[in-house]
Amino acid sequence: MKQYLALCQRIIDEGVWVENARTGKKCLTVINADLTYDVDRGEFPLVTTRKSFYKAAIAEIIGYLRGYDNARDFRAIGTRTWDANANQNSDWLANPVRKGEDDCGFIYGAVARNFPKPDGGSVDLLRKVYDDLKNGKDDRGEILTFYHPGAFHLGCLRPCMYSHHFSLLGDTLYLNSTQRSCDVPLGLNFNMVQVYFLLAIMAQITGHKPGKAYHKIVNAHIYEDQLELMRDVQLKREPFAPPTLKINPDIKTLEDLETWVTVDDFEIEGYQFHAPIQYPFSV
Image (cartoon, rainbow, N blue to C red; front, top):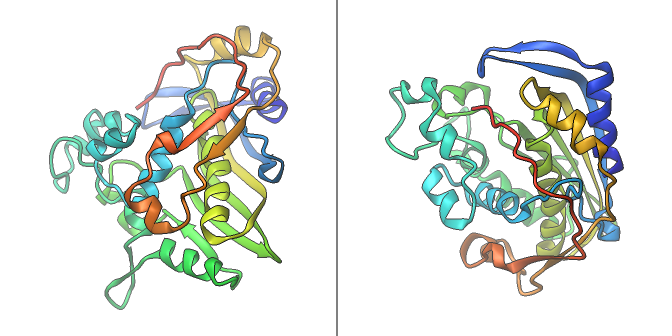
């Protein structure tokens, strides 16, 4: 929480106003932020200065790991985060490759699980990383990426948090995640949970101890219609101690994640929080 609040204050103190073409709004923006999550100590980075709904964040990353490309599938596992991008993004609605209601196109996990090869065919990046780590192997390229510039026109949204690089030192697994763009009041609340969760669950299903998760944000911003709530409400509140995430120990393989796992397999303990804040969402 101290890292999160420090970044919010830094944006307010040092940020530069930038026009955002996609949303038509201004963003108060800083470049480069680095956050670290103590997965090894079980300190779940869930925002406490407002009530946060962690299960939707976990549902979304499970959808990525399953390769979902449809808002309907994301809703079915517990998140509505893709509803607007699939059905309210004017550029996407006019895109001839869109297949109809709820279609997201070639996004995030759909890319990673079916990454096109230049000589034809595709590679399942998640399967490769999982198999290597399961066998105790780290070739310094255990990278799960959602970023494919040649395919941006095939999806409703370019990936924001686009790369996850796993590293194995002895029996301890580490994660470096990179994010090109971050809506700090809304998106970062989700993204912190997802980086922590991704390391925790990959460590569990590959048989390793989790270490630290390192989260780099390139462009961190607060939208103009979010600024007052952040400055005058959320930053005035004192944070509570971090809660603990409990993961169902029966989740042992990638196949488990792909098939029967639901958000009910994840619970938090000791979560204290302030009242919710309804930040505007920019499509």
